[in-house]
Length: 358
Image (cartoon, rainbow, N blue to C red; front, side, top):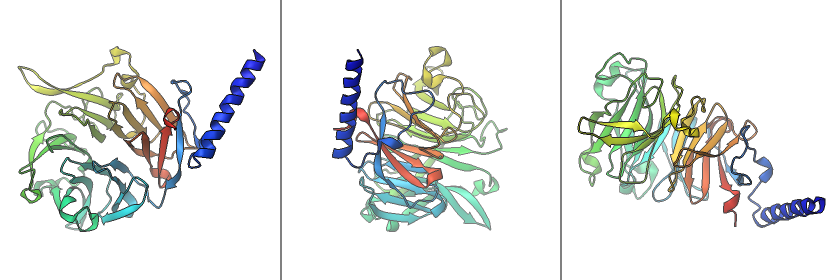
């Protein structure tokens, strides 16, 4: 038995050595699982080197449909376009960008800020990349929010956006005034392009997504939405994360239509016994994304960790800790690689599953 174990350890060491020698971009020593351990056995995330650096508190990363990489370089007041190798292709100055989404016409929807009347307001912009042949710095840009009436509510913040198959999109809004039953600050706003083939025709603000509580501490709540993620399907299901007072700070909502009304319903309940719906499993999730298989990734800035769940709500893996991340704010996934906006360390980190190493 002892001899067998020694052979097993020797084989494992040879395997790790071969990975390291054939792929010098991997640095296994920098990988660390969280306190919950690795419930998938020997499957771990391996760090890819080098880090992408030169950012100042980046709060968003997405993989566009081209595919290109877009980073909200928040405290450098710019959006940066990169290729999948991390080479910077173009950038756009925009004040304090915190969220980026892309529709199927390759337009970017950006939550940021702008100054007027001697004040700084939260804002939402739309950028037409096709018109400029993907030159981000010269692309036409249009501000969608705030509307003139919104200037009377300077504490409203636009915190997240996501786009759907028909180029409609949502924008999450937060704020302190939630007494109104018609227009509470904590809401999700619906937009539709007036003419999806003409950027200059503008977008219509349809209204608030109905039947979402602005202050609830339970499921289907808009109490401090920090991120939105849509599925790459012909539906309007979404995954949301929340930083407000709530026991369920990451939720998957299915859109249902009944003879009575239309509304979102949580895909899971605490009674289902799945990890994704466990109360207080997250502390301050700031970002989420969904891969082509329906797996959900959540970045928890307070726990300095990233978690992966399957489409049944089971936790597949969780990793991180202070030695790996400092306030991970956003996650993106493409072609087996997981991208993390490591806000506190001013960098983008990349990881690949050990089972995907070739």
